[in-house]
Image (cartoon, rainbow, N blue to C red; front, side, top):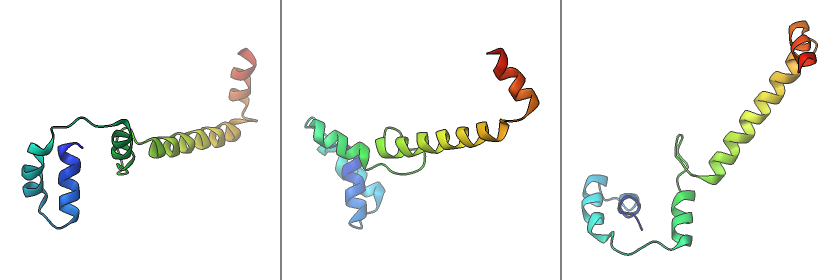
Length: 87
């Protein structure tokens, strides 16, 4: 388990994060299993968190939906239709 993850667990239990992190740093000695690593990545759900598959999938779906909506709004627009006929 990464030191930050240990610190977060301690902070959830009421230990100030600064103190929790200092206590957690020496505990970073054993390698993570694949299951542990996936669980730790999946636990990061804050905006801008990297690597969370669920969050990334939702963001991709939102972007795809927005693109589809925008494309539908452009249909019938003469300049859009002219560009599409060139392709």
